[in-house]
Structures are given as structure tokens and as C-alpha cells.
Image (cartoon, rainbow, N blue to C red; front, side, top):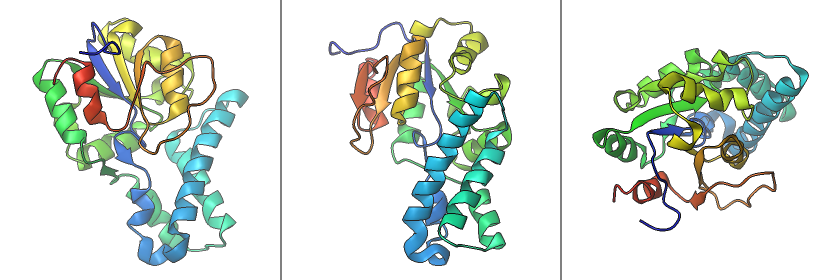
Length: 229
């Protein structure tokens, strides 16, 4: 194990969207309908989805992630003059059938084999999170799908990162937290987790009041940090 290795980890907690599941796979399922707008719509949809969570948290107005996701999609479609209610509904339903990244099943299977608690901590509401986990075939490896619904506020609020600690009776430093969203990884680090930022797309580190413990490119790189390879 190298000097960046995580120690005394009892639970591995994963962000869902962008970390386990490819959020852009929703639009890719309807590339024939969107044509050249597939990538621009998908990127704006995701951007507004996140912005709306942060703005709601600052305003003290919580709505579940399904509502937020729908409003963000409506904004993205309107921005590109796409007026197709059937397509809109199909894109929303695609969020229940997002693709996992290639390494996910192997990583989660290895963690479970080694007796580590596996949980998902997500902005997703239960009616979104439970189906996508089940439909992707990884439910057998996951001990808990934990939604921000329980806290009534979105990440990166401290109340959200406290949820796995309360659920499993563990301390923040006993959690290895993985997110592909830099702001989320930093939020977890600020809270006290041992954090691996899964920087899939070679992005620049955000300049905020904490840093992830380690930066990785895929979740396979988590395993040696835990002494499992």
C-alpha cells in the first residue's frame, strides 16, 4: 500500500450520478431523436440539475431530485427549442435505466467479498435511486441506498454526509467516500471522510476549503488504496 492508502475503513460510500452511473447515457438512448443536440442538451441538463440543487439549498426550499431533474431538463430542451413532450418523458424515464461505468460491478463485488459495507449516498430521491440500482444489476452488492431526502437538503450540506454515519454507527474517518463530482468529493473531505475523487474526465481541482485525499481515474484504483490488490 502506498502513502496515500486509506486506513481503518469500515464503509465505502459512493456517489451515484456521474460516479457509478453515466448521466449522459440518458440522452444517448435517444440520440436518434436529439441528433446533433444530444451532447449540448445532456451537458446543459446536468449543469442545471446541479445548479438547481445548490440554489434550492441556499434558499431553504427542498424539492426531491425527480422534480429538480425535470425542471433542469425542461430548461435544457427549451434552450435548444426542443418542444416534444413524449421525448421529454422518455428522457426522464431513462434516468431510471442509466448505464453503469464498466468497472463498477467488479469493484463492488470485491468490496463485498472483503466484508466492507457498501452504500450509495445520493441526491437522488428513493423513487429514482432504487430503480436505477436495481435495473443496473448492482443491487446485490449495495447495503443501503441513502437519499438526501432523509436530510431535506442537497449535497454538499454536512447533514447529508452525516447520514451514512448514523445509518451504520460509524465515524466519518471510517468512511471511504468516492465521487466523480469534484465539489462533492471536497464536501465529503471537509466533513471528515477519507475521499477518492474519481476524476474520469481529467478536470481541474476546484479551489475550495478542503481537498480529496487522493485522485483516481477509475474506481478500480480504489481497491489497492484499501489493500485489496
